[in-house]
Length: 215
Image (cartoon, rainbow, N blue to C red; front, top):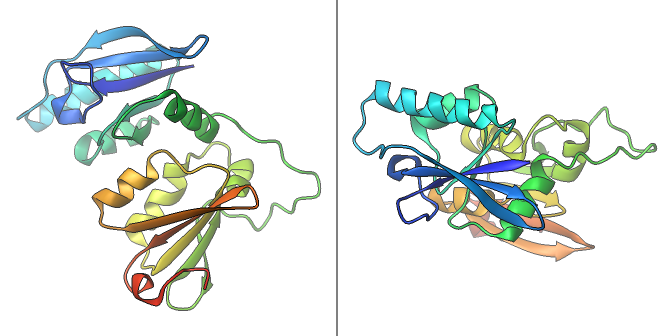
């Protein structure tokens, strides 16, 4: 399994428009850099140039039987093209062994279904549980039923399109992209451990005024 990280000229994780190279990471004993691919600086580029660079990145990733790209921010036209081509994107301010392990758990560990578990009524998106825009999402259960979908594909359409006050997510680990995503969009995130699981509350609108989503 290989990950591709957007990096600047100092080998630091960066966004698409400050990209200088792709650093390739693979797990040997631990996650280690195993290669670099130079990409010319993409600042002040025209739309065709952005499209060409993005398509080149897609070709590089897929040529090595991977589908995951990590950067500080992947938005706009690059995001649209990458998403359309099935590239899984993760946003983070820094890289670490823990981050890589969490990404692996999130996107590649398909948990086996419990035989007694009812699966028909577990959709791959948050569901409304109360009036005034309160939603709930059990990520681990949804991931078992829909292993072909990443957490981003399940949650970002909801976060960007749904009118909600508060979303509560139950998960075994917090998605590595979620906190950064929320900060960039002015959302409030609070989390706590409960019975070995994380309960993550994303507050939007009135929820910050009424308090904890769980009451």
